[in-house]
Structures are given as C-alpha cells and as structure tokens.
Length: 334
Image (tube, rainbow, N blue to C red):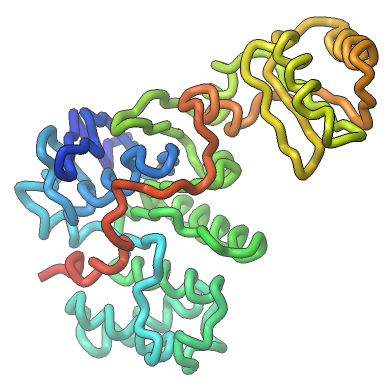
C-alpha cells in the first residue's frame, strides 16, 4: 500500500518549549492510525503541522506525497479536518451549514446543494436538516461537523479527539461512521484520549510523549510488549487500599494502581500458576478482606501507563493554542 501521511524528524517550538522533538510517522493509505499520548505530548501540534495550520521548525512532512510546507494549498484540497470543537454556524440549519462549506470549497450552488443532501442522508440528519444547528444535540452536532469535513470527499481525514464529551451511544455511532469511511478507502489519523476508541478503530497505534513517537504497533502488539497479567483486587474496606497496594507491589512488577471509588487495586505481574492463590493468602495474612479477585490481559491503559508513567486522562496542555476548528476557514482551498 502507498503511504498517505509521512513525517520525518518534525520539530516545533512554542517560545522556549518544544512541542515536537523529532517526530517520525507513517500512515498507509486506507488505514487508521491512532495517535495516543498525554495532553501536551504533541498530538494536536502534529495534526496542525500535517494539516498546514502550523509551520514546523524542522523536519519534513507529506500528505498524499505532497510536501505540507512547499504546497500547502494542494494538501488542503485533499484533506478533511474535524477538531475537538465543532465549527458550525449555530443560527444556520444543518443543510445551510453544509451548503455554505460546499460553496466555500467552490462546488457551485448546485454541487453544494447535491453534496449537502448526500451527507445529510449518510449521517442520518435528513429529519433535522431544516433545524438550526444550535438546537442539535451533542451527538448530532458531531455528526454534522464530520459531514462538513467530508464535503470535498477527502482521501485523508484528520480527527482530533472527535468524540470528546459525547455519550456512549453517540460515540459508538461516530465509530460506525469512521469504520464506514475507512471501508470506502479513506485514510484516517485519529487522536484520542479514549483508549478503547483506538483499540476499536486503529489498525496501527503510535504513542507520543515529549514530542516524539515512543512506541508503535497494533493494539495486540503493544499489549504483548507488557507481558504477564494484571491482578485486580476489590476490597471490602477503603481504609486498607494503601496496605493492599503495598502487598500487590511486592507480588507484581510495577506500581499498583488504586481506584478509590471502586475499592480496587491492580498491578502487573508475571504469569505463573497459583498466582491468585498466593495473593489471597498474602492478603489474608495482612488481615485484608477481599471481595473479588481476578486476572486479565493487559489493556491499552496498561501500555499507556507503562510507556509514559502517566494516565491517559485529560490534563491541561501547554501545546494547545486554541480549538482546531477555529482555523477551518484556513483549510478551505483558495
């Protein structure tokens, strides 16, 4: 397969701080790359450079073989972008929003109207087509924003945390849309804080930290790097969580994770027969009452934590200089 997105040694500075420190990336056409990393790791900066919204301070990048610095307008003609915030005109109807962007992309009045109707049907928005976008639910606004990003039938689609803030049903519906697009040949670069989203959608996952890719592979390949199992213990009392964490850390191979609200403690440990029985005996000797105990395979959360030593939850980001979609008009082909 040909390469749809490539980056070599990308560097980007914000003042005295580096957002990208030599990032390398390759995405094959017709696949999904999940870009994971803590906030501030460089994910959004990477997307901004690849979509021509930022000029890199070093390195090179190509989209569909086109250099993003030398031919930015040509790159923009072949991509779609949907960011963390929707870029819709709230007083316009769903149909009017789509027709507006179609006209901005020079589809002509008839072409914009036809393409708007196609997208309304594809995204299940025909019944709401004449309603102002400000009356749409969060899930409907996200679908409409995705539809806008597909006005020109882009071969490459950049999705920057597209399901942030959506309820599980709307998130699942968005996943279905992405899977349908990829099935039709679209290449997708997806940044997300939901690790199950990457597990569900991505053919390849790249973990970014401190402005560079620190691990890459399929979800199963990354999980296999962890090795062993995860022991999970649910206690009867909150008060003994720290004691149980100490016990598990002596059994396992890393730092125990404590989820206070669930009275849960877990740790990675080498796979061996009799492991759970040994843990139960140790807990009993420490006068810790266990309500539940089990083993499971490592998850992407485990991979993420082991690679970055940070959880995948939202943290204030120094790299974020504003929502991606505030610059959508910049991406409209001149």
